[in-house]
Image (tube, rainbow, N blue to C red):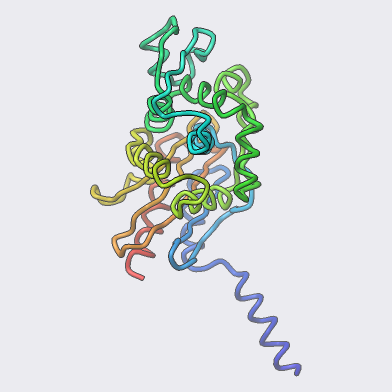
Length: 286
């Protein structure tokens, strides 16, 4: 009996030790000289790796991914249409320090966009105006967070608009997520839960078309790699989350958050790219 208990407790201790992959990724993360959290999950096998996976990190523009999901859920319920026209008012335009090609092109507002165009702008080019209008269409921040809770994802909190973040730098920390929660949301999207097949395909398309952060998750991957991802950036954050199609036919959900780092943006992006490449290499041949 005592021998059985010894084996049992040794097994628990071993299971709690970081894997070789996690140790290698943690060494890469140290180079950011800040808070780094990541979660990686092979969706078909359940193999995983994480560092500070249950800690909260500011999302910045990563939150445009769950905002888009919440809007598409309203489309699926018949409350909105992708081709429905939405008037963007001058009062909808965020301050100049918020990235918004829509505002730059239409500085006086008073222009119509379809819901589809707003989602494409918010996700693919991370447009702040489009994001805030979509949040309004979804029913506000609390409605989006509640949508996520109903999906079973409780550790993603959508709390403020882009305009509110621009007014106070500390506000960004209220829009938070844990790496593991973001991976769960990516898994739900991959498996078609929470959205219709059509909405899922549309969102995956605009995520693949993301043009921001080319030196992050995609930075060291083969040029032909298919990555559906969303970035987030501020002086305090450098993030990227997404679904990667591995060469062996499996899929990797990956969320990497870098917060309050002393290193420059180039190094933060390098850390994300090397973590992504290491996980890609580790699971592509398994």
